[in-house]
Image 1: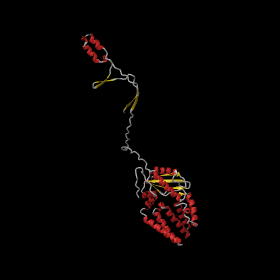
Image 2: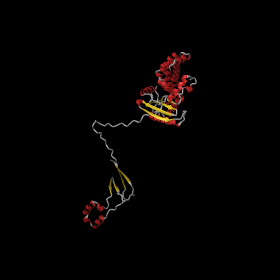
Image 3: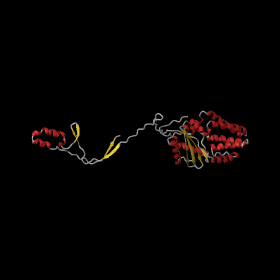
Image 4: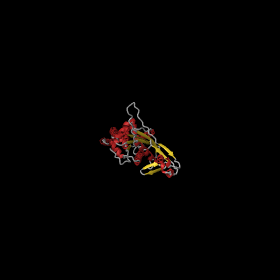
Length: 344
């Protein structure tokens, strides 16, 4: 099954598998699973519904699932009629078919019903050890099964109560990587979440991504499960952070042939100088299409003396007039700080 992304915000998709209960009922564990799915959706992550998860995990196994349900019906009928041996055979086959059809991850309550009936049938034929194993599986699939099923009574019910207490004290362990990889491949999402919720509201989650990457987190939530509790937003935010791919690292430059150090050109820093000009700043005078700086009195020019020698015979007046210094205009700029940047 392919889950399409609905927009740029939905950059990742994650399937949340039913959480295991440790000291909470199967109903509470299922409620925690749904709240986690809903709050993850608010974090901008594409999350398939429970029916979509179940459909994806049983895709291609519809025939086994149909046979599993048919054999369960046969086993219940045989058990009601007192034919316990026939019931054991039918129910045992039903459990096997359910497991191959992915029901252990997608149809917990349905498989719990099979486990309960099988335990009853085994006790009827005197196989107490096998019945306890079936009840242990039942307590794992759907804790506190007896509390929500008034018809559960008798020897099997008392054994189940003991088994429930033992399972509640065990530490949740994640599936092996091969199982996780197979589930992720069947779901077709970017990641999947498995985990447990404990009797004190302790939540432990494992986020598994393609390629074997995984991350774990622990949190505490309110029990009974409250969909409006802020703790779930925190949990969903942390899960979303693990689901989203990490930003790609910048490409590294080619180091060149082995043995030759890579040439590194150091970046040159421009020189920065702070200058404060004096009161009498240089003046630039524009004449025609050229620009030249002012040079003071005319007597400072070389051509003045050349011309004077040529006019020596012209009289005193010429000498006096020519000897007068040219007027000089001095422009005063207001003192100011200037920032001079010299490029490298």
